[in-house]
Image (tube, rainbow, N blue to C red):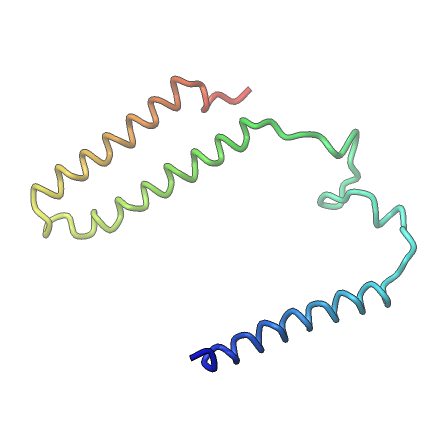
Amino acid sequence: MLNQYIGIVFMGGLAVLVAGVILVFSHLLGPRRVDPVKASPYECGVLTIGPTHETIPIKYYIVAMLFLVFDLEVVYLYPWATVFRDLGGFAFVEMLVFVFILLMGLIYVWRKGALEWE
């Protein structure tokens, strides 16, 4: 029974071997000197002003995650809307419950101040 997995184990080992060989050759053949121009941060052709390693406020990530959550939930409305007439009244009530839960989540997040950008 283990004979069935020999090919997978062989390909996995080959992949690890090739990756290791590439890393070793890159280390051996790559340049060793550090060029200050290459080490400097580059942003759209404009030289940076001030410190380049600043922390990003956690609010940015919270707003981004909330956007993803609500954006993905709205995606569920599209298939429902395409077959709305075929589903009947029960599906309409179910979607109202779904939208109500989304609205409650949005109101909760709004009251907590997670959508305030300072």
